[in-house]
Image (cartoon, rainbow, N blue to C red; front, side, top):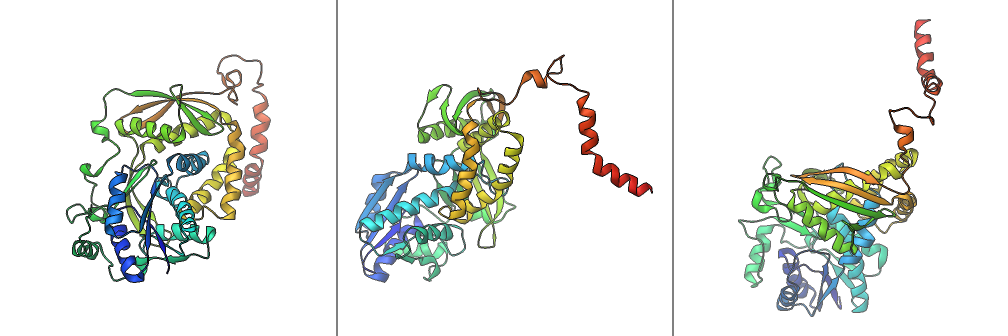
Length: 397
């Protein structure tokens, strides 16, 4: 290798990898870090990268782009994996990989590296993106080739080489944070019977500690995207950050699940997605008055496949491009405002309105009306029951 660009976070894994790559390949290593909304002291990340042996540290602010071009498209499709997971890590990987490729080409590097293990999904997500965007670059995945195959060995290597580490044997969680969520794996969480420790959570209060009075908010949408909270127009990143604050304060967005990884094994993860949880509830609720019934059915039938493509790393695939366009066509009608009640872990829609609403009180009312002939329902019922009637008559004969 002549030069390697490493996806670098400054955590245990990538700090060790940075030093290991330099020693193993005897070439310059550029440490690339992506700001996708995680709480980080970027000056210290830069200092640590240089002290650990990087030729250069490149930090890219991707927050607005991440929310606008990755989070919002997924939420326009109501994407959710296995009924629970809002794809926080899965959505961040393709934008990080795309920027890493851009940096590699700008730096005239000939190799890309990442800190994903050989057991997880991230190796697939990163490398699928690399191969889709820059197939001629060599991919180096240390976890699949070195002998530092445990957290214990990584910490020993870091201690030997004087690399500061944020993970200790007393607090061994592996976490990933961005504007959409934070995830926790490892440590006591590897036993699915163990309840997560309250001290572990970062973005949200527990429902028990949330305020005793509800918080009401109004979210405005245009073409399926949120654009304002309580009448205040906000940029995509600022809007999601505001929702995170509101949701976290009210104990919203915690998830503890065992999911099926793409590589075949089951994995236990604990997630905090306060803003994303509110966003999905609000968006889905607005669709109930703006989308046609049959359009919604078709869209919802495609959603599991769409979410699976994101989870499995196929963001840049032709089928993903097709599905995104399909998901976005009906969103042209999803315009309006949803009023939500946030209370002790619950996000409850309590009002919705739209100039393009398909709901008509004059049709739905239980009072007298002159737009609907109730007697017409008899023929409708008989025709829909015809095949069941035929079955019953056949059974009697």
